[in-house]
Image (cartoon, rainbow, N blue to C red):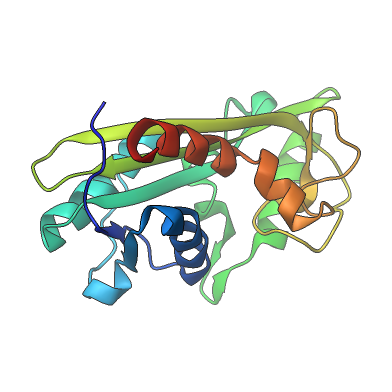
Length: 202
């Protein structure tokens, strides 16, 4: 596994919240994190049907355009009764002409489960795949996952995306109800980041 020995890293994302989160995580290693937006990069088309495939597209594009190592994140929720949907299309389910509407996406998810009479518990998992790519084409991929179930009605105003309908195994609160610090400790993204840090930074 290749160790990261540089001082600059590009986050292959335009998401400011994600940039803050990752910059904070990598601060102890003295790494300066910039975003794709800082470099004026467009977002490449995500044409793969796996989280790892799309994470690789984003990381390699940013690395080749900036000549700096780049980190990308592809994540989503996969529901067992829907054969893993929405999966890599999680964000697509929320797209509207006015922007992303995750309340609508959660309603769509529940309606689909009701239509097929999916038995309880309605098993689901949040997945996060991180790809760290270098300008020479090398990459390292790390996958995080947290298991749980889809619940209804939506619960909680914290988090984002499908958090209000996801109840992790062994918990009584959805990710939407959970204290953000607690969620971050146990989330799919935290799982993947721990593996990334252990593999390339520690």
